[in-house]
Length: 129
Figure 1 (cartoon, rainbow, N blue to C red):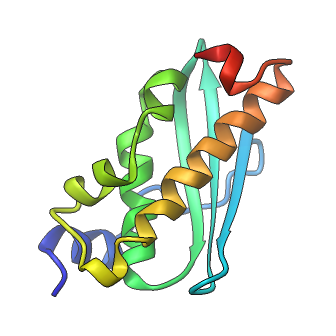
Figure 2: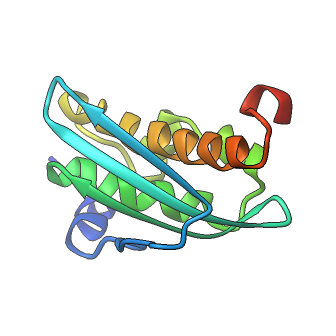
């Protein structure tokens, strides 16, 4: 069964929109289940000022993408890089074991978006930490 938080973020995902002027974009696909996620970030003074996502996947994947954006918005890039799959699962009040891999989509796409931003700034996430 899904928690109320998962259902809430599946039925009314937050920050679900295409951001055409993003500073960084991360694209991740999960070949095992066919889910795909894109995360877009706008950065001001090292802080994720705005964030959005698009996802093709199951309810758990949609909820995980939504929660990823909620947790990352307003965080420094370093703090956002430290968001884990378990953080997403915990914030959603749990995911069924068979769906826990869905939390990987959001965090991986977020890391890829931050990496894309840093590369555009002439840095890498390793240098940034």
